[in-house]
Amino acid sequence: MSPRSRHIKSTMATRRPGPRLHDPIPRLPKSSSKIGVILPGKGDRFDGFTIDLSSPAVAKIAPVKFRQLLNDSLAAWGAEGKRGIWCSCPESSGKLLPVLLEAGFAFHHAVPGHAMLSKWLPEDQENRLPLYPHHQLGAAGIILAGDKCLVIQEKTGVTAGRKDFWKLPGGLVDPGEVPTARPTSPVSPRPA
Image (tube, rainbow, N blue to C red):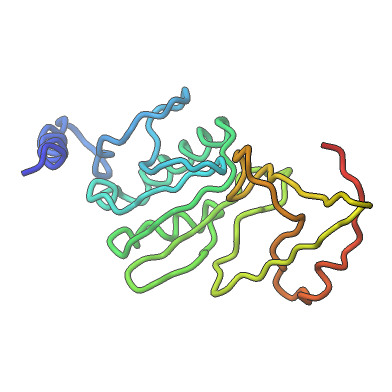
């Protein structure tokens, strides 16, 4: 028996006597925020967070308790400046899907035995979470001024933060956009 399963077993075995409507919430990690307990998962470099519902302890949480835990977690992540929240939901935690949908999560993609949901937290910003791709198409353009060529560094994205990585200006072609229209889009100087 692993130390983690011993901990979960001992937590479940030491229930307090008295009336209760639902099973108690298993021990979950503490947040750095003032709210306290948050759902398990991990942050990413895009100011996002992925909730992991694959833990046996999470699968035992009653939907009513999960709703409160989810609301507290969303408040904590919003206060911490998180933007995109992902939720990895295996079949074993399927009973929690209605709570996630009620909280504003949307299905991103699903494969046999697993669903991925997402929620964009900032209400004053456009949702920048990527669509689930079966392919991605990008376009870039060369902008010449005499003997100079415009290159950029990304503020967000895969290459953000790499000081020695420069690239041609461009981006992904949006769904429904004609690929040949992307490179001919007007270019205007933007302040740094």
